[in-house]
Image (cartoon, rainbow, N blue to C red):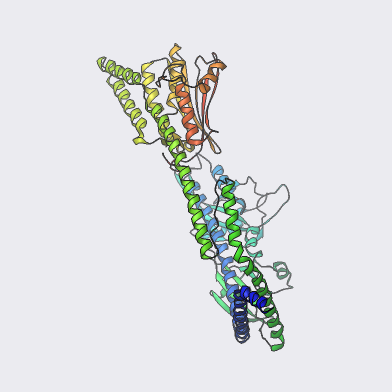
Length: 596
């Protein structure tokens, strides 16, 4: 019996020591904490609440300032980027204003531009001034015209300037400023009006709750309430607010007597506007007695005891949990998981074992990745070798054209061909890079077509269309030129004139499409299928052998190797209907893809 007890004690001795030491230290910490709380809670509670409320008011102030900065930036964009640079006699500003309005429509009810005589120049969204309304007599208009250098914020009011066919009239805050309008050779003053959605301002305040029954409100420099949670009751006279005194106070924290109660008032100014964010918190006069404290201490002690019991249960699991998780990690490796994560934790021995297994898995993964990279590098080298084999006949024929032009006194044409040939080979080399922007690839094709157009004079023409959004995307060099070369040799070469090669780059979402179309002879379906599916015979030449399709397959394989099997080349062609070849690539901005 004694031996059995000794065994139990021996097996549980660590647990017992941990339990005893942790329990004693925890109980001592609880008692000390309770005594400290009892001694200092009264004084620190009020300071903590005040600091927390001040942070909340600061957050509201910061959010409101950010919102107002955005509105001021919108006003400046309209004034300086749209209105000031536009001659109203030659063009309008409505489209630009509507575009900016659409961007900020969640925060702006409407934007309107008026002349100094109250004539409506533009508005967004489209609206009509109500009949009988004298715009020049509105407060926001007179304020802007009297102080032309400032922005003017109004107080919340129901929008009654524009007619609303649906009969909906919403609360807004007017932001107005004077602008300079250009008409012909002269200038005149005008007024820009932006009605800010009142709901956008109230949303910043409604989610903020100060301690106890505290609240936050917004007041302008004259003491007019812009937002207050009890604004309706204040308007009816059932509730009063000390807003006039708050508007006159500097930033800080004040204690005041109001309506028979003592309260703290936090005042913070809002930049650009003269507004002030005011937080009001009732001061509870917190006191503690032993009768109030005893239940609190009992609750804390019970909570700590429960926590100790729970931790003792978890300690027994803690010893075996690392081994169980390590075993599961090794099981993932056995099952062939692609990216297994080996658990490293627990005791020193378990951590060392986990680290050793992790290093082994990382090494195996690295070896596998090296093999894959070597295979891909070999494949890319083979395809790049194919792409690097520029047809020497093209160079010889171009040099013959240059010699012929010089001998016939066509120096200007010869200079154009030599310049195009130099640019052609410069982009072909690209300093050894395989990844280039679409702009360079199409410039390479443009130089190639210029030379071929001089060679096949009057047989065909070409056009290249590339929007700016496509020009800065990524492509592989020398993928368009083989397609154009096929179009010339298989279509334009057999035409007497009126041949056309159309090259277009387009962006659709995450996809980039480069289309090469011609009005040549076209091809039957079986030839189209053979061009992309047939494999070259052993020993086949890789030059521009007519009809071999090696150039097309080279382009197809290079695109899929760099971007994946879902991309590549598609051909649409019918006899006597011409041919359309599309290169499908991902829309990746140039510079974001590694050049290998």
